[in-house]
Image 1: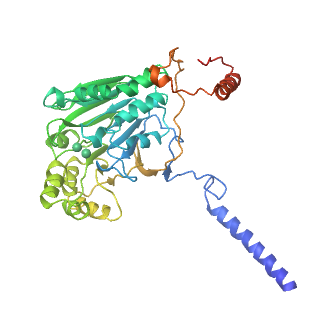
Image 2 (image 1 turned 120 degrees about the vertical axis):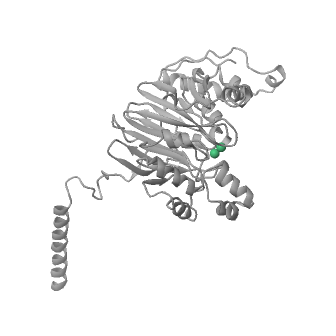
Length: 407
Ligand SMILES: [Zn+2]
Ligand SMILES: [Zn+2]
C-alpha cells in the first residue's frame, strides 16, 4: 500500500516537472489546450480584419459547368484592405459560397463577368434577386464584355434576364424594400486591350481579350496599392495574357483536365477531349508554359474537377513546363496577399449561415390595400383571423409598432 502511494506521488511530481519543462520551452502566448490558436491555418469567414495594405482572394467556384457539392462553377471573390469587394464570375452554384463569406449584400455589389457561359454567370439571377430579398439595398453593378454582335453581348443578355424574371420582380417589389432590385450593367468592348473598365477609390480594373469558343471572352486585371491581381476567363493561351499579366502578384488562369482524363473519367471521345482540352481551353502543360513566361508571384489554376486522383496528374503535367509558386484551386481556398507575403489556407464554411442585416436603414414598402390576386384566386383564401390576428398583435407589441392587418 505504502509503495503504491509512493509511486503515485512520484508520478505526480514527475508530471509537474514535465509540465513546467514544456511551459518553459513554449513561447509566450502560444496555444494551449484551453486557449485559442493564434496562428490559424484555417480561415473562418467573418472573423478576420483585412490589414489596410492587404488583399484577400477567396475561390468560391473552381469546377466545371456540371456543378457538384465539392465545386461550384467559376467564381472568385477579391477583397481589398480599403474595404472594396469584387466578384469575378458568378457561375452556377456560386451564390451559396458567396453567402458563406458572411458579407452583407450591400458590400458585394460589384460583379465582373468574363464571358456568358453558364458556368461563369449562371448564379447571377439567384444572387441578384435572392440578395434583394436578403437585404441588398443598393443596385447590383455588373461589368461584362460586348460580343461580335449586339445580341451576343452582356447588355442584351442581362436585359433579357431581367425580362425573364418579371414574375419574380413583380412579386417582391412592394412587399420588401426593393431598392437593391435594380441592375446597373456596364458593357465594354470585348476586344479592347488593357483598357480601363473600372476606376474608383484608387482601384483600377482593366480587361484584355481571351480566346474561347467565339469572340466575347475576356480576362480582368485589378490594380490596387501597387499590386496586381488577375482573373483569367476561359481561354486558349493568348499573347495579351502573356504581355499584360507579366510579373503579376496573383495570376489566376484556367487549367483544364488533361485530355486522357476527359476520355477516361468524363466519357469524352478522343477528338472531343483534344479539342475541348487543348483548343477551347488550356491544358495543364499549356497553363504551365503560360505561367513560366508570366512569372507571377503565385500562379493559380482552376476549372477542373480537383480530386485526390486528378490533382496529382494535373500538377505533374503543370510541372513539366513551370516550376514556380502554384496553387491548384479548390472551392473555399483563401489567399492573403501583401507585398511581402502570400499565405494560402482553406476556408471553413458554416452550413447554417444567415444573411447579414442591411447596413442602411430599411424603408417599409407601401404595399397595396388590395390583395394582388384575381377575384378567383382571392375567393380561395382562408384567413384564419383568430390565429393570424394574435400573431400580428404579438409582434406589434414586441417591437412597439402598429402594423395593421388588412382583413
Ligand atoms: Zn466558357
Ligand atoms: Zn468555363
